[in-house]
Length: 213
Image (cartoon, rainbow, N blue to C red; front, side):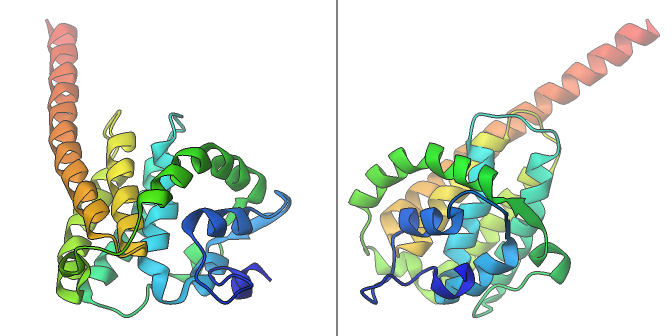
């Protein structure tokens, strides 16, 4: 039922992201499959999928392997966006992956307050940044961020996820200003991830030298 209803309100107008998330969360019982989300999105598939899949990394929680679980499908989606495919495609194994609706509902409740504030400022602007060729360039950058997100680099999930979330909602609402903010956040996240990787490598080398010496 969700797959046929999400995205269009009762008045026939496109729903806001917050409304889509609430409808997908439902009453918090049962399971939600990624395929249901993809089937419901239509031409908003790329933006909303990037936004939804990046959200778990934005929340200040640490679950081992979380970044890889969401980073891999994010990379696949970004690659297709870069190639200019009209709508996203994911393997059946990923589409059938279940997610407890209770967990999705909890994530939605935590994200709604700041999302509602952001939505009040969202509007279509700077259309050159949401043109087909610009979206391909955004797809290339999102692919790089998603690959970095999937790598086991400590403490980088939140900045990378936040940048991807901003890019996703910018694409979704055709807001070039928010999209530009997401790209800027992504550049900062890449720099931070590079420093974190260097620090982790130096810590490993120092530990090995301590063991040997």
